[in-house]
Length: 271
Image (cartoon, one colour):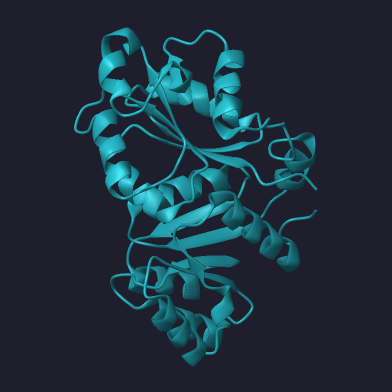
């Protein structure tokens, strides 16, 4: 079995650049997370374990420099490649942050060969195309009938997860309140529920308790950003295995793989 895809966060307010990079990475052994809104980057890094960031410098609302400063203040040791058309103008300012020409992808880029060369150098390894978006995965996901419900109030995070799942033909519903999500789950056909423990409208623990009582065949994936012991104690109290709690930040490919395993067990995905 091939290794899990490399998670790449793409931050650029140029939609055409995002589409170009995302389309390319989806054909390779990568799991791209892309946003044109730099204000969601900090929250994204709090949720997902990212292997590499591709970061534009000149954006509205927040610049690439603002994001680099935030990462330094939070001591986030994530490899970053700067994508910019203004390296010569910004060279001295970037150098003050330890960014050199080897950390730069010059826009416009006409060849992805140079982009991947920079990525491989940054990660100090060669990323080889694998199972992700291979003929094997295309085949097994073609007849995917799995319905996934995500109950989490962080809209942008839900959208990233939803995009990864829709790419694999999952049917996905998102709810930003626990009471609404629970009502949907109890009254509609679904197979897998991803639920944030700390969700407005109803606690994740109460949601899980009711699902276990009324729809015990459903697969549940609890996630939380903090209060690990309290979250685990609450899960144990409602009869759910505490060791199945997923802590943020987590790797998006690992969540996708877990959903795949559950879907296979349920028979809604034929591997």
